Image (cartoon, rainbow, N blue to C red; front, side, top):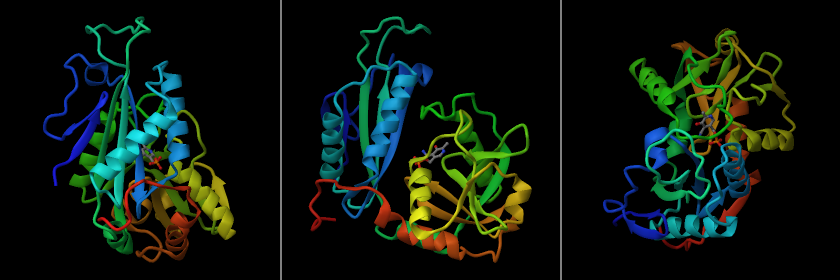
Length: 294
Ligand code: PMP
């Protein structure tokens, strides 16, 4: 099946779709995005994702390209046309195309909208989660507005590559005070000695993860305490459990940090319970794709 992508008003084949060479997303990373999970034919937490997209655009004065209903229509079309039952939808909005110049005084620029979907084999993430993943800590070299979800991802690309070379699949980024801000593409959590879920509180230093937010809600439903406080790599080494949250992997157990085993060295009971309950409590909007297809 050929993949279909949406670019600026039309649905095109993956190989034919393109953006202008002077798109500001390409030249300046002047662009924001969202990744939304598709789980069993449902979009997961679409309202929170689209709220965050609105906030990202507003923080950067990018004009919203269309109504929320129109964006949702495109997202659902892309899921349907690519027959995605389980996977992710990627939505990107750039400030638009203009002759290269740093300021963006031309307020009439029309944003570029790109939407792609990717299919996962059902249960593939569960297989990874059954074992858990390794993470590697390293300095956080990003900018001062990590709360805005921009495509300025080079530090994350380098961090994940370095983590891969160290045999890990995620990097945990450490600030100048020696505290973990978040993962390169996830929020970082531990289960501390008190049996609380611990994750850094929100600020300009980290992305307000949608999965992080929903995980806090799920913990509340399950009667598990959450402590929003930063922790160090040393705290992680001695934690009972560790995990990451992200839309593409939901709750992902972390069993090693910097080659040290965490807790029992296996996904722990808090993480496993949270992962199992996650989709039950997250917002689920039918993606529009028939549940009989796959
Ligand atoms: N932090 C960073 C830096 C990320 O890139 C991501 C994933 N995009 C997350 C956290 C997790 O956010 P979400 O739960 O919204 O996917």
